[in-house]
Image 1 (tube, helix red, strand yellow):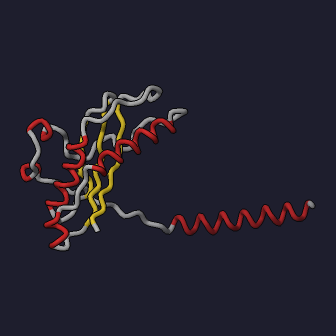
Image 2: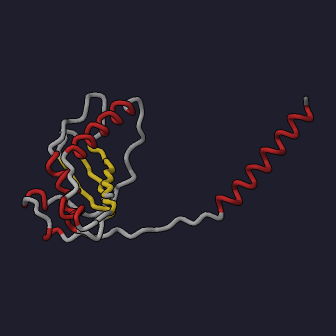
Length: 162
């Protein structure tokens, strides 16, 4: 019994050592934040006031507690509403335009947009604009459910044009 514990312990040490060597060899790739020329977008002046730069506190959302389920359901509701308003422009389909657009939105407690940040765009402005329009046309959103005690939340939206 004692010898099997020692063997098991040694095997685990070896596995951890090998994993550590493997993980240390991985390099992370840095990506730059592409910028978007707001002047080409067909949005109202009040929407232009929203920041289109990467939020400085993008990963500083407070740790979640018992409201995880409420927050997860709320975020899925928001994403569902946005995706219902999202279109793949016919001209882009005809011209074979494809790509991925990633946008972070920050919502205030009452459901209004506080920030919109285009963090990954395509080379096709029509696709970028349509992704942004899906967000703007979906707002304002419903207020946070009771039990979510955050002043604002960040939501990552991904639009895949294939």
